[in-house]
Image 1 (tube, rainbow, N blue to C red):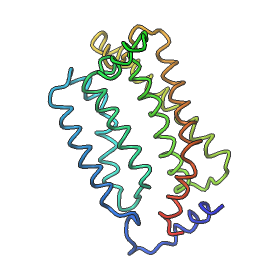
Image 2 (cartoon, rainbow, N blue to C red):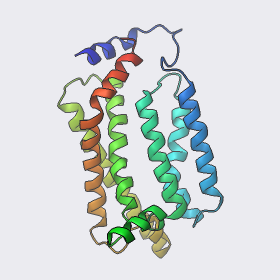
Image 3 (cartoon, rainbow, N blue to C red):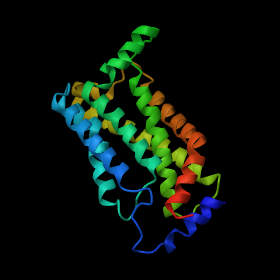
Image 4 (cartoon, helix red, strand yellow):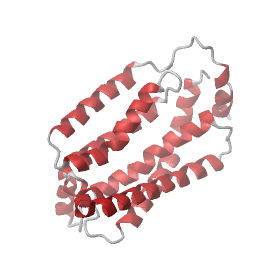
Length: 224
């Protein structure tokens, strides 16, 4: 497999090589746009505590990506997906998921029982990490099997979704009613199960639709 051979040869790259064959401009532009969006969303959020909880993955993840950029530059696809997911989180943090305007509009137009914006975010919460996890496994592990990589990635995304639901449960236990906006269950007793299922489906869809594009970018990243 071409991509596998390229990844095996990655360790032989010269130390003086450019840190990213795709160039630095796009990641920098995405970073600037993300910071601007984050600042704007944090100026007057519905609730500061909820905003911090919802945007915590960005506040933690982005500095890590910056600090590791030279040693581990990701593919453009991964950067773009991470940027898109971050925007979803920023919007949800600013309005609260149950009050995001576009979700309310869809709810009203189609006669839905709830604002399903959080379902969309959970879907991409599997879709995006699936590609990131795939890239990490291909580049940092010796796994090359066509079955085991997507299998481990998909189930890792489901495990991540379960961990996030446990975090929400802990927040609810500590904060009580104050955590209502963070939980965003909207009265659905099966909200936890739906969130995990949606994330799992998102991961599978991401792997099915983006694997070939991801392989091409990985091959170029490693100079094939």
